[in-house]
Length: 149
Image 1 (cartoon, one colour):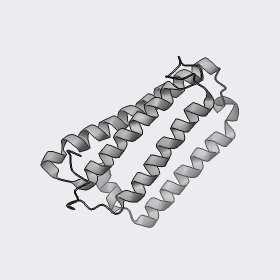
Image 2 (cartoon, one colour):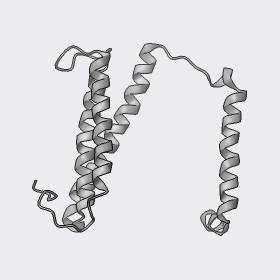
Image 3 (cartoon, helix red, strand yellow):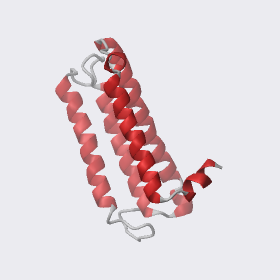
Image 4 (tube, helix red, strand yellow):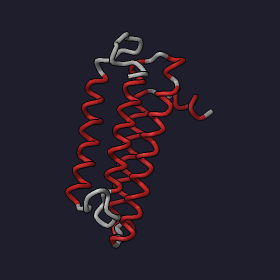
C-alpha cells in the first residue's frame, strides 16, 4: 500500500525527502552528543565486535549456500562465482574473528597484526571478486565456472 504511494512520487520529490531525512539524522547526532557518545570497555567491545563479525560470517556462508545449491536449477555461472567467493570471504572473516588479541590462540599467538591481516585479505578478495564478476555473464559456458570445480 505504502510502496504504491512512493512509486507515484516524482524522483525529485523523493530525492528532497531523502535529503531532509539524512540531514535530520546528522542534526540529531550533532545536537545530542552526550546522549549518543559511549565508550565501551575492552570486554564489552570484544563481545560487540564478535557478534557483528559472526553475523557477517553467517551472511557470507548463507550467500554461499543459496548460490551453490541453486546452481543445479539456475545454471547461473555468475551466482556460482559470487557464492564461492563469499565462501572464501566468510572463512577468512571467521579466521579474523578467531585471531582477535583477547581470544584464545588460533594456531599461533593472537595479536592485532594477525587479525588485521585476515581482515585486509578478506576485503581484498571481496574487491577483486567484484571486479572480476563484471566480466562473468549469467549463462556463459566456462570450464572454470562449474560446480564440480
